[in-house]
Image 1 (spheres, helix red, strand yellow):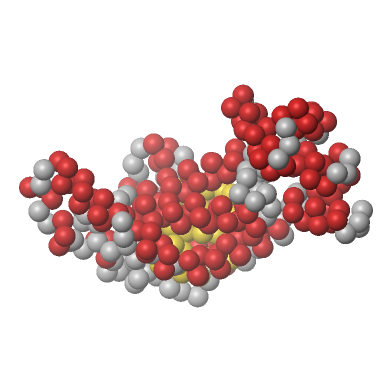
Image 2: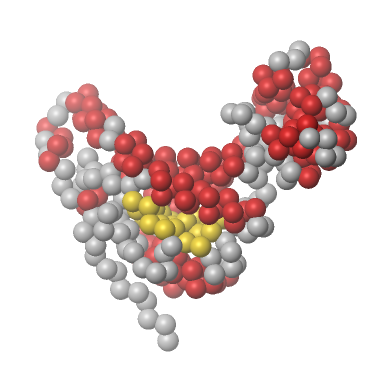
Length: 308
């Protein structure tokens, strides 16, 4: 019989009392807000210190996706909700395939809307999910402010045993470090304004980390051209207007010419873009994108080299 993991209590800065906010309950409303804002200002610097390790995670995830594998986010509570939000926004922004980013949230989808605190201790459920959903070569990223959440640690250890590459994002310098976790990324945000309320600085840091992580992966996979969202789904009037605006900004051409290119490419912004920037016909632009896995700059380089 499998015995549930025992929670190991690791000293975490997020659980300590913050001397700078000891009198917060005696402050005026505006001073409460100023105090919280002052604490929040430390978050970007904490994230900046972790960027070299985060870059390694980006490269590992990019390599996995290029090899036809997937990226998994694992979290509980605030961490799981932030992970769910990040993954949900990638499809409309970058037109990612639905299986590229998978989210495993302790307590399941219902815990996104309603707290399920006991679920974070369910290491057996995490192991079951990993055994069901993770494949060798996948990249699994766990998020936990304390660095000790049983659901997250169990998921990473199980995924590693399956053959996935694993990484942990934590706000605790004393976070779990085992041979089953390939990369530990610490974002030390210190004690919260309200002791232990990790939806505050720790949550903000995790949001910044995940947004930067997934955006960097998308850029490296060619889902952008320059800083433009050339892979987005244009499935409403606002986004169709944005598609035309992006094409005009990228090419410097007028509305009529860009509209005609979009029509000829059946609304495919990348095809229209390569067609207009290179001067080749639409079929040739589409072929170049196919040969470069949809990477606009690489497609333009291929055409410039007259390989196709």
